[in-house]
Amino acid sequence: MTREHFDAVVVGAGSGGGILAPRLSDDPSRRVLLLEAGPDFPDDLELLPGFYSAGHQLQHMFVGDYDWGYASEPLPPENGSRSIRLPRGRLVGGSSMTNAQMFIRPAPFDFDRWAAAGAGAGTWAWDAVRPCYEAVEREIQCKRYPSGGWQPVQHAFADALRGFGYRDHDDVNAPDAWHGIIGSTKFNRINEVRQGTLVTTIRRARSRANLTIRAETLVDRVLLEGGRAVGVRAIGPDGVARDIRADQVVLCAGAYATPALLMRSGIGPAAHLREHGIAVVADLPVGERLLDHAALYWYFVNHELADMRGPGAAVMARHQGNDWLGVATTMDEAAGLCTFGFVTTTDNAGGPLRLRSTDPAAAPIINHRYDTEGHRSAETLVHELLATEQFRGSTFLDAGRPYAEIVAERIGTSYHPAGTAAIGTVVDDDLRVLGIDGLLVADASVFPAQISNNTNLTCLMIGEVAARKLGATPRAA
Image (cartoon, rainbow, N blue to C red; front, side, top):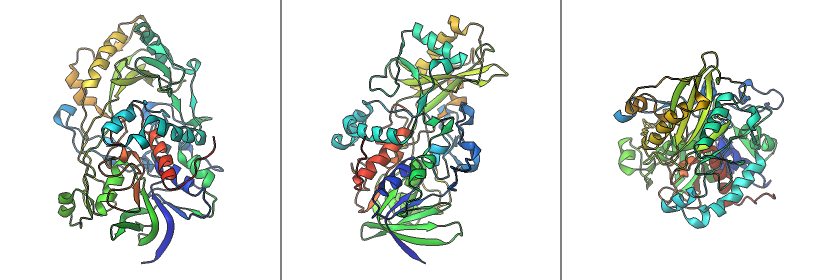
C-alpha cells in the first residue's frame, strides 16, 4: 500500500472544503490535498456544463447524476411514516453546485443560541464570525432580483403581506432583517450561472502547484496513531485503497457523511461502534442530534398569477414571531399551479445517524423527524392570504383538509442537515475533534444549534474559520 504525505488533507470539496483547501494553499509552502468522492470538471471555464446554469424553479434544484442518493428511514407516524429523499451534491463543489443558491446569512441572535448550546462566545459570537462571512462574500458573488423581476404571484404575496403589517427591507442579510420583513432573496449566481465553490474558489486556486485535487476518491477512514490523526485511507477510481499521510486532516464531507466517516474511524458512540466491530478510539456523541429545517408547501391554482419568467423564491418573508420564513412561486404555469412554501427557523432535532455497515460506499442510517408546531401560524397565514384581493380567483387545492393530514403527506426536509458533530460535544471551539490531535471538522456537522436561515453561506463561513484556525492569513478587504 503506497503512502504519500501532505501538510493538510481536506476531505470533501463542497462548501466548507471548497473554501478551506484553496485558502490553505494561499501559503505556497503548504502542500494541500483536496479529496472528493464525485467527479471533477477541471475545464469548466472553457466548457461549462449545462447543469451549472442557475435553474430558477424550486422543483429543479438538484442534479441526480451528481447526487449521493441518500434517503431517510421512515419518518415518525405524525410525519407520515414516509422515507424522504435527501439530495447531497457528489462532485467537486458539492451541494453548492446542486442547491437552490440562496445566499443568506443567519440572524445575529442565532449565535446566542450557539453559545447556549456549548459554543464559546469568544470564537462564535456574531461579532467574531461576521468578518468571516464578509470574507466569503468577497470571494463568491451574489445577486438579488429587484421587484421588477419578480413573478406575479410574488408581487401578490408581498402586497398582501404589507397589508398584514410586514415591512420591506432592502437587504435580507442585514442584522435587523428579521421579525416581519419582506425582501429580495440573495442568490450566489451571476449571469444566471451558479457560483458554487467549483467555479469560484476552487477554480481560482486550481493551477497552484501546492494544491492537489483528487476526484472520484472515496475516503474510508481517518488513520489514527496514539491519539493523533496521521492521514486517511482513500479508495481511488481504480478501486485500490491507499494510505495518505498528513499533518492535519479536516473533514468537510457534510452532516451525513462526516459522522459516518468519524464512526468508521473509531470516533463515536462506543456501544454502536462495537456493534460493527470497530475499535473505540474516542467515545463521543457523533450523530446523536441531527438538525434540519421542516418544510411544508401549500398549493393553489391561479392562472393570472402563475408565470415562470421570474425566478423562484425571489422574494422571501420572515414571520413576525420568527417561527418561519416563507416564499411564493409558480410551479406549473400551464396548469396555473402556485405554491406558498414555508420553512421553520427553529431546531428540528432528529437522529440518531448511525452506520449501516463499515463499507464506506454504504449510506448511513438517517433518522429525521420534524416538529410541525411552527407551521401552524403559516397555515393560518395561507388562509388569510387566499382571502385577500391579491389572490382573488385562486382555487385552494387543500381546502377543507385537516392540518394533520397535510403535514403527514408533505412535511419534509429543507435540505439543511446539521449538528451531527457539534461544537461543544464532538469538536471544540477550534473545530478540533475532542481528544484527537490533528483532526478537525469544518462543515454543517459542527452546528451546535440550527440557524434561522439557509445553511450554505454558514458552511462557507465555517470553512473560512477553519482556514484561519489552521494559520491562513485573513485576506484584505
